[in-house]
Length: 421
Image (cartoon, rainbow, N blue to C red; front, top):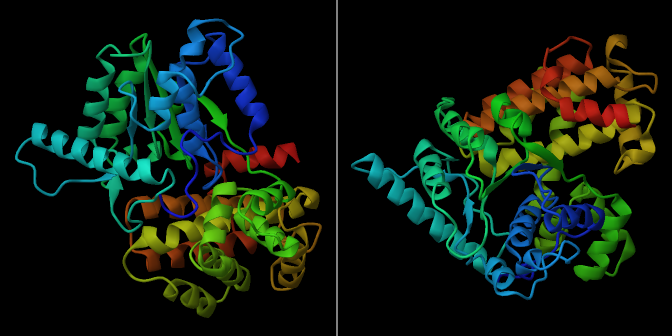
């Protein structure tokens, strides 16, 4: 097993209250048939989705409504923990096979790729595929899902479908064909089928799909809780280093794991944080020279490998900026650093972009987050990362300068954060 890989059948760490409510819903047969598990990178969406699948198949559900599920001891739980249960179907975005003589051959090739990926996950539950590969949930994959869903379960009372990164159901050609095909399954699901989607960008799903799912958000954990996880479970005894890792992880324990297991906590996941800092600094600078330097940091190809994690880290920094701008600095993950950054940038920005605290105001930050959402969509379509970055920095600079980009509507989840502060 790869270093740092979790125990099979793990419980998502730090989500005890959520797990308790879900276990009660499963035991009482009240869990919705279609769920959308969403949240930032590294908060544990896959772990939670697989935990839900395991709970639904647990044999203890059949014995009493008060049973604790998943029991982790019955045959169903053990097989589910090993990713070997015949009635739990896990699907992922996959590269499109290059040679397939027919639609049937294409479906076979995609299914073979899926089983290869499952074999890797049995060795390391959090193994990541090639970040530069162009992947999608193509129509052929959705046809496989619908075919599997039409068959009654072979061993348990339910068939559970876990579909990861569901926003990639819209392929790089931007055709909604795959998503529309999946919608037909959601409109009339078999009574024995349960569907769990995961997504880091639920806004990218078709509205008709979102409206048929019950959303289940995994929120980032407070920095101190992640620091405790880093110390207790990852062996980082130095308190300052543990807090530093926790801040860079942005409340996500699995991102913290990646930071610790990369070289000295600064490469790999740490590089994405440094890239995010450069992007934000360039946007606050606002000059063409800064925009050029930010864009040239990324290669002309391979957007997902370098740019996608940097954009995820940039979202975390903009969330902190939003908290400070709204007067709720205590809710920020690294408030002191963000206050200093906003104070230093305030003099360079136009008054229309400045909030009462000397930096970009709430509306400007929300528009910048909308620009990040648009850049993430560009990454999903495999657009040139340098062009994507240049446009992103230009739009963020415009937002900070008080020139509306019209992107705010693309970030309702952050508007919700603002209302809750």
